[in-house]
Image (cartoon, rainbow, N blue to C red; front, side):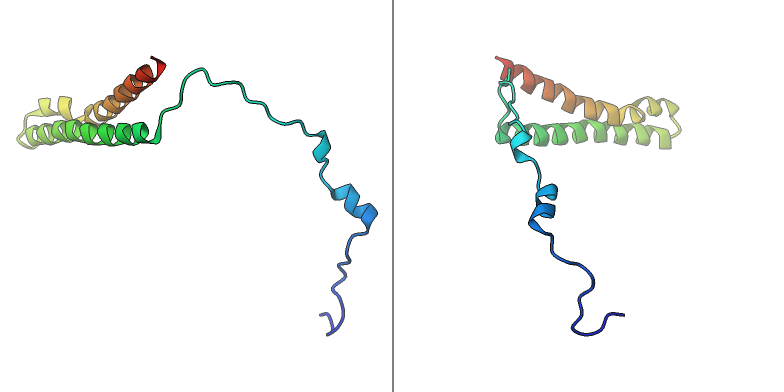
Length: 107
């Protein structure tokens, strides 16, 4: 346990030691990025894409899930045909909307 008034053994670095730990900033070359081939989507376009994909995907997937589970509960096992692909189809709608946005940006 250190006594009052004593240091804990950590001393400041000398100039020579500090030079060894200094990063070699002159050796680092600046990063040059190639020009973008396609324009970037704006914040508004991304926001509209997310909201549209979320709303339409959840409506379609939820409708398929609701109807399919209603059929399964009433002992019509063909309802599983609607229940099982409900989530992938809802997500696929978002994927198709994103591809449409990308195609619009290319033009």
